[in-house]
Image 1 (spheres, rainbow, N blue to C red):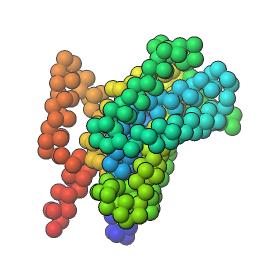
Image 2 (tube, rainbow, N blue to C red):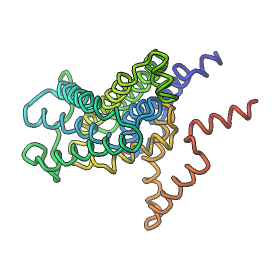
Image 3 (spheres, rainbow, N blue to C red):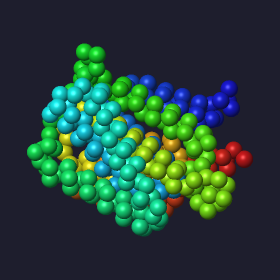
Image 4 (spheres, rainbow, N blue to C red):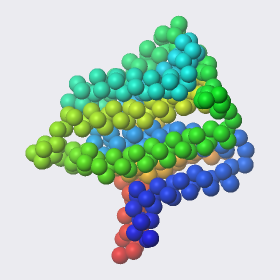
Length: 315
């Protein structure tokens, strides 16, 4: 039993599901539910982004672009073309995956700063297109999004959306954990360790880099689509460069190559600004200090550092 609980695919996932189920006991109003929903949506993106950054070792500074594509894809298809929301979600996710595949094949041949600049440029292009094509996207003013309806039932209210996003997060973590423990996941870890050594061992670097890029884009697009239907209104800020940086920071803070670290990082960086609003003028100063101190004293991220400290204490 203890061995079962110690494994991430079983015990860790069970702990996450238990936390999702029990958290409503501590949520006293709709605002608390709203924060929890945003945490879940950010965590879904970060779980996918962690596959790319933490396991494949490939940086992306434009992932909010895929988030925005998922959001605006669902909004446009439902509002302007009358598509069912579920079909719009699937189509926008497929479109983001196709774009990630087409863009990923050339840019993932780059490394280091060149790769970061290429993904940054991709994200900026998507953001500019969304902001300027006002006849389709509503431009900087944003656009309204139809509610999510499935089989005649409309998802409405924070409590309903909490369970939808919680189920989506648990599914995303389960898929990520299974991918990591699969041959493809071992290939991604090999690429992160040494691309040359992985290639000598028979791993095709280009294939697995693109695979990680596409999967992470799918996670981001699904989260973006759910965000659009939940909020009922979206703006180009969802696809901005600053949002991309926030997502990368969440992954790094939680701990790269740690699926649960990505979830914790999203939870911390989403809820911390809400707590620091009590400090008013000093909010951003304290927020920056917390990030700086975390990177100094927890350089591997929250979850890996604490897990290593716990292992040393047990020994």
